[in-house]
Amino acid sequence: MHTLLFEHALLPDGWAESVAVTVDAHGDILRVQADQDPASGEGITGIALPGVPNLHAHAHQRAMAGLAERSGSGQDSFWTWRSLMYHTLARLQPDQLQAIAAQVYVEMLKAGYTSVAEFQYLHHDVTGRPYADPAEMSLRTLAAANEAGIGMTCLPVLYRYGGFGEQPANPGQARFLNDADGYLSIVEAARSAAANDPNTTVGVAPHSLRAVGMPLLEAVLSSTQEGPVHIHIAEQVLEVETCLAWSGRRPVAWLYQQIEVDERWCLVHATHMSHDEMAAVVASGAVVGLCPTTEANLGDGVFDALPFLERGGRFGIGSDSNISISPAEELRWLEYGQRLRHQGRNVLAGGPRRSTGRSLLEQVWAGGARACARPIGRILPGCRADFIVLDQDHISLHGLSGDAALDSWIFAGNHNPVRDVYVGGRAVVRNGVHPAESEIELRFRKVLDELRVPNPGGVTA
Image 1 (cartoon, rainbow, N blue to C red):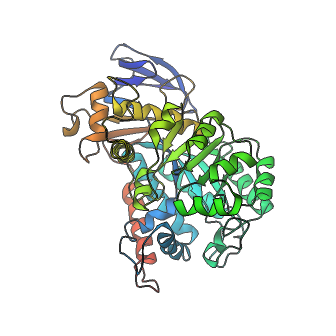
Image 2: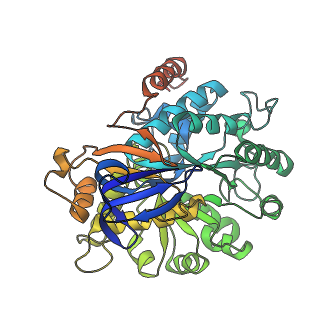
C-alpha cells in the first residue's frame, strides 16, 4: 500500500487540491482525501486526471501507418486500403506482432491512454493453419501489454465469412477464420493467461455482421455470458447498402432484431445510423466506439454525435488503425467534425457555460470504462489507480488550471503535456519517458525493416 499526493486532481465531484490517493497492493484505489498535508504522501505537481481508456485498437496496423496515402488507379476507399493491410498481415510473425504491439502500447501510455481494448483478429500462421497454441497471437498482445505496463481488455476476434449471408472468405482472410470451438478455445486460453492479472480483462469480438453468421454468433454468445462484446458495425455506406440488400434492414437495426444487445456491447464506429437506430442503442445501454482519426483517414463519414448525446447516448474513443495515437487528437477531431456538420462551435459541450474539453473527457471516461469492462475512468475508491498528470509548466498550459487546462490540452496546438502516467498505482511514464522505450523501439524498427518490402502493386508495405 502506498499514497500519492497530487497537487491538483479532477475528482468525480470536481476539482480538488492536495489530493491524497491511497493505493492498495493490487493497484486499486483504497482512499481519496482532498486538502491533505503536503507531507502525507509522494508529492506530485501538475494536474492529475483519470487515465483515458482506448476502447478500440488494432496494434498490427501501426506497422503500415502512413503507407496507404498514394492514390490508386480508381477511386480509393476503405476497401482499397484493406488490400494493403492484408498484404502486410500475410507475412506477420508472432514475435513481430509482439514487437509492434509493445511499441504501440508505449506510445499510448505516453499520450495519456492507460488502457486499451485490443481487437485482435490475426489468429493463424501464414498458411491459415492454427499455431501449436491456437491463442498464440492473442497471447502475444497480452505479453506486449505486460511489457509496456498498460491495462488491457483482450478481445480475440470471431471471423468466419467474407460477406453478408455467410459468403466464403477470401484468401487474404485465411489467418482470421475460426469455427465456434476453435474461437472459444482462444478466448479460454486468454482468460487463463489473464486470470491473476488485475490489469487485464477478456471479452469477445464478433468482427462484423458480414464476417459472422447468426448461428455462429449465437453459439459463441451462449458460451460467454460474461465480459464485454465488441463489434464493427455500420462503418461504411457500402456496408449499409449491402446489408439492406441482403436483409432488408440497416446493420444496427438488423443486429437488434436478432440479438439482445445490452450494456456489455460496444458498437465500434456505428457511423451510419438512422435516428431510430440511435434510439435503440441508447435504450440498450450499449456504448458507441468512435475512432475519428481513422474514420477520417478511411473516408468513412462523420458520426452524428449531437442527436445521439441528446438522447442520452454513451461513447468512448479508440485509436483503431493507430495512424495517430493521441486522445487529444481523437477528441479534437470528434468535436471539429460536429462543428463542420452542424455549423456551430462547442457543439458537444453539453450545455451553456461548460468546458467542451471536460465534457468530452467525462464522456470517454465513462463510456470507455463500460466498454472495457474495467473499473477505470474515475479517481474514486474501488477503481483502478490509473492516472495521468499534465505538466502545468508546459508551454501549452502556461498560466492555466482546471477546465481551462483541459481545453488547452485538447484544442490548442499539437504539443503533448502528459508528463507522468500511472497504471495500477505504478509509474510507467515519468517526465515523458517510459523506462523500456529505447529497447522496445529498437525491436519495432527491426520489424519495420523486415516487413517493408514492395508488394505486387509497387506500394511499400
